Image (cartoon, rainbow, N blue to C red; front, side):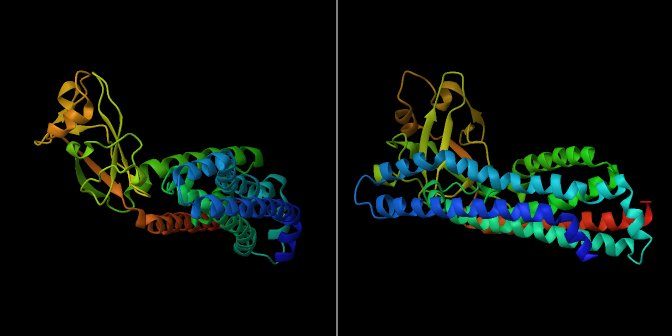
Length: 344
């Protein structure tokens, strides 16, 4: 059975390995070059370090986007082209009857197909994730945005969970629909929907967020774009810098909290008075007659901030990976149950 599975999927496997090898060569060459630039201009800078960091980010910004997008797309591609046809093609062409009439049971047939092909899919994704994480590490050390939806799913161990889930999802959809092309389309739609739902509706609640109040008076003399090098004052929230994004007569005051690696999960556009009541317009220091920072210095307003600390990054990685691996196990069990009880 293992030999048969290999013969059925050897073309896809060899093609995936060839593509992976080509991508690996490209990432190693460009990654070494990026590290040379980082070590010479950023790590060893003596002055104007901010300009050196910005120059490196700008130079590799577009390439970083495409490389990260490639890793994000890999699990979906696996689910569409490896998972969906895994069972659907057999049921569509009727070749499953020949195998089941031999000494191979349905359970063993499914176990070998899911196990052998699934392990290859996860291994390919794991190597690609390792390469991309290594390649992007200089840029990530500068941007400190690993919690963003794009970067979180394109780094670390989470892509392995995505790949396992997408593969078993495709297999289950193919088993239910029994037609290859419709199963591929349904797998794509379901996987994209889940990839949109998880970062925005589920991931922020993996661990209870930390909470703090930030007084607007701490904004006094904080220049736009303030940072460690600017000499901007720090507020009481463990050294965060607060940056005025903009204001208007009829709009909320928009405040951005800048702290390396922190994921702010609350709405920062709401300004509150000491009683916790929302204030707007002139009451919220949005009037044009007075400079905003001058108003902040004399106000007793504040904003409430819920955030996930930077040191929870790997905790979130393990939680999300575990969730998707658990879902993969449930889908594999469902495939086994359906195949034994319902499929003919």
